Length: 133
Image (cartoon, rainbow, N blue to C red; front, top):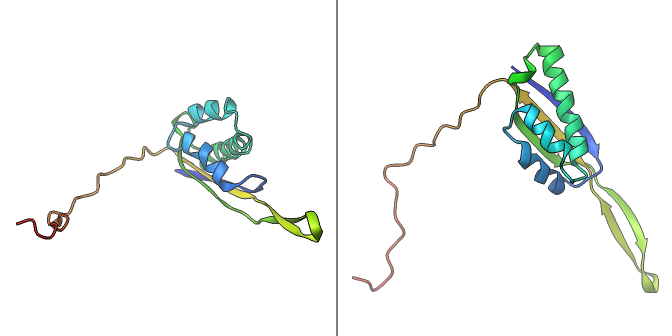
């Protein structure tokens, strides 16, 4: 069973959010909440809020056991950009881009196993250098 929570227009860049997302991807939700609580990153607070919402969705809408839940998927995508103008010397101006992000967290109680990709048996090696016979 899966449950999802989406938090939109978070006032941080997606690149900074992905640093926190990589910390909790695939972990049990209890461990993920602990990591987010003590993380010094500013974006950890909205990610924690979205994770708590996904846990509540799984518990109330799907009837999942909270102790069995894992962070199965976490995506942090770019949101709309707020553009501002900053006056500079000699009548010039530069654009300031204030980035936003969308956070999508999916929790599930299924144990995700990574199956090894089958290797191609006819793998071609690198071509030999010229003149080496």
